[in-house]
Image 1 (cartoon, rainbow, N blue to C red):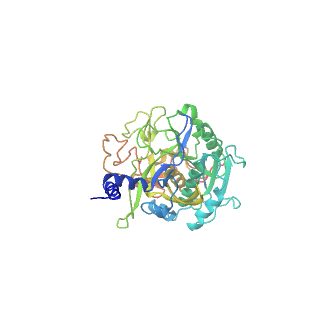
Image 2 (image 1 turned 90 degrees about the vertical axis):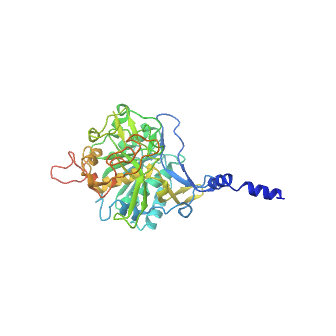
Image 3 (image 1 turned 120 degrees about the vertical axis):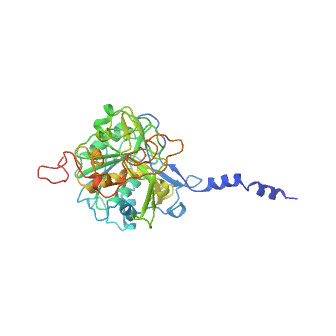
Length: 406
């Protein structure tokens, strides 16, 4: 006869035990809380955690996290240079250890130092001043991912971080305006979204900056109605992919759409000109335009704040893909007046076209990664700089393609 202990042990064999074991495995969660109102934004970084909600390091997550050499190799960026151009990051509130954490990341990745004293790093509040706002839970992790993603993609880019007073879309938008007025900034990344779509009639002026590429994360909740600013006509909406090493292939990588990436139609904002000749299933603005790695299963190794101090962690979400694309714009040169149209005007072979089988139950181009444009990955992911070079009203009278004076 089985003892009571034996009965308990036998009861844990099978589905119940599998569920219990699954609950103990590392999993990903949003770092920032859901926005409390329609005008509030949520950062989109997804973090690997244990069953107690604590951050876990690269050695404890499935697969091998990506490093700087991987990003540059996968997107054919080796040998490119920003030539003094800067990428700006807009996020909510403060991050006291940003410079120190960034220094650890760059040293470990073999990248040149990027410090405030050396002129490479600038951290300001939404008015451009140096008095930092207080910390808002979750957003320092977002900023750590953003600055490390820029560093990984564009090691010689200057980095500007503009910290908004709050996570309200109006304050974040005012921070974009501040970033656009700063010297050498040619691209601005926004790794956050509002819960509901917003109208360019109300907020568009904050995100409309001809001559600067403004990127926005498409979201991490899967296809549906997009949030803002990804739905703005004035930004490049960035979807997400799963990026895996494939040494036996010519590229050395395989890439597929991430089912968690945001996609959909905005009824409040106008389509891009480049979308008018495409089948997008949208009457208004379709999301996304392009994509980059976002699936946390192929996340980036990042050094940043955890509950027990600064440490290595693995982060993903379209919070990763947005600063990657902003950095590619900076590497490609000063953008034209409508930089989000440039990928639509590029030759077809300028991107990695991400294709794959339809998602279960999907009957729309918005939720299936197919040939050409689709909602999940837009036109595709970078294959060098060709899709991101300026094409419309994009050169100075002397024929050069460098930052315009502002």
